[in-house]
Image (cartoon, rainbow, N blue to C red):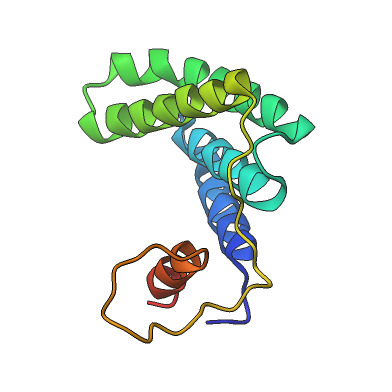
Amino acid sequence: DMAFSITDKIDQWRRDAYALSCSRDRIGIVISKAFELLMVVAKNGSLDENLKFALDSLKWERFMAIDLVNDREDSLRTHVLRLCEAMELTMASVIECGREKPRFDDSMEPMPIVSASFESTPHEPNIILNEIFDE
């Protein structure tokens, strides 16, 4: 559905995950915070001042959920928490390096692929993302 931008979809997924926050293990909140982190980067890039706040918020929620997961042998929750930790480490590295990563530009239309060439174009990520999100 082209009516929704990438950031709108991430925000919807964040809200859906937050709806799971009533679970005793807090996993819905952790997932919601992970989507929030992705949304900050997608909207504003990796140098946005809110990125550090979103990163710290995810880290805090993940730490709160770790003890609850350790009490329960649940590999899915463990993997979700590991994925969130990987996101934290990646974003912390980006912040530390001070590099601006490309952000999603919802206003750009993907360029049609006109040849079988696999040369990289500036629009290639948007083509791939549109294929993923239009499923």
